[in-house]
Image 1 (cartoon, rainbow, N blue to C red):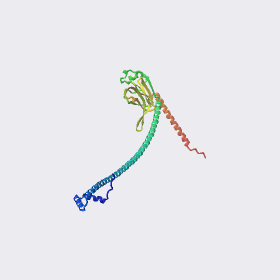
Image 2 (image 1 turned 135 degrees about the vertical axis):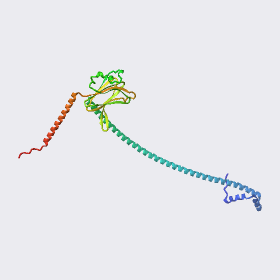
Image 3 (image 1 turned 60 degrees about the vertical axis):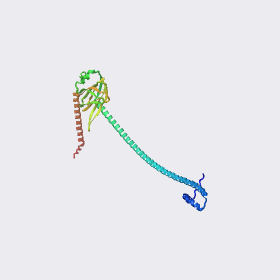
Image 4 (image 1 turned 120 degrees about the vertical axis):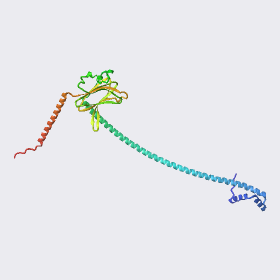
Length: 335
């Protein structure tokens, strides 16, 4: 239904005052003015309806305005909050990206540093390996020369040994009585049965003078055992052991015999190697001795040394005489 336009402010403000007036005053006034009471009742009914409609409309308008203001205020607050959250998100995003960039740069620097370090380590390792190879090769060549100069020999003799022979006597186990002629002039420096534990080796050192022969013979009771010869060399701060005969594994079915002649005074190491075995220990019977060179060899060697010394002395005397003749001033001619 159409809504009537609101009355002017003065009419609206006056109408409640008139309506609020007591009935007695209105009746008195009406009687005084001489108006018709029925006509006045009709006028009041129309005005009351109009007033009710006007107040309802104003109330609705006021409610609509407050709602609109509230909605606008809520929208403004929501927009501010959204903008604030957006700013915060933007700030957080920028910080996170900056941190990611820093971490990425730091990571790249770390990777580059690690690459450089790995490269340096690889180069140093390769250089160290090359040096170690060269030294090992030099040691092997030198050891080979020592073995060759000493006329080193090693042989295998297949022989059966009964279980009763392994009773702690290396001579009986190795049947030295059958080779008495070979070991007659040899000074035995070691003869025993030993147990070489798993993952270990047994070594024994022997001093061999120049020209003397180092002889050895051994066999293992079961399975096999490694054997090698090394030479101890004194150096600044201690000593080292150079390989003369590489370690080789020998079977229990063979009796091994070997010898080597010292080209000069040496300290030799005989090694029984069982480091390759993880569980089994090995029982080994061995006999080691040194043999001095024959007398005539010593005399011949001494004579050779004396002759060499005499020859060197004669050459020195001749050289000195020639130098003296060359340096003498020429004789003056007679007047």
